[in-house]
Image 1 (cartoon, rainbow, N blue to C red):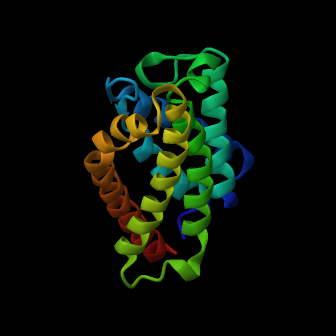
Image 2 (cartoon, one colour):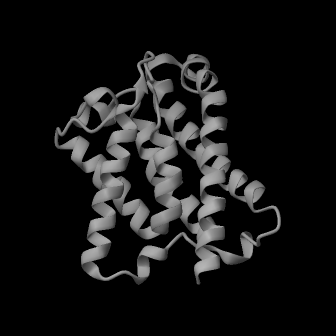
Length: 186
């Protein structure tokens, strides 16, 4: 399976791939529609693809690196924000959710028995949907501290459902195509 393919690379190639994936996540973060208090970005698409390419261990390392870069003040978060205040603010739960979702998605995609070629797109779709649910859960949990639980659902989930389903569908298609090509090469 594609997830975890980075495991077989030399140290130098691993570092190069991890840096590229980190930059990819930063770029996905900046492609955004500013909504208040949670911006609509391509971060989740980045998370899905990073988990599928790098697997649970290295994918999670990429996401943790991204968050640490933001915490120290680099403007890597959505709308070129950085600093610990972002992680402690209304959107911090989503950022923390990225870590857990990346590990979960990478682990499930790496498990060959879960992904036989029959109905591959549907299986990938539901794995990504599960990861997205983790992001939503942790996101609204922290957002609710600022706006209450009812408003956190209205502001932190409802405006994003259609876009997230589109990102999940696109990522599922990409992952399915890459997996099929990868297996044909090997």
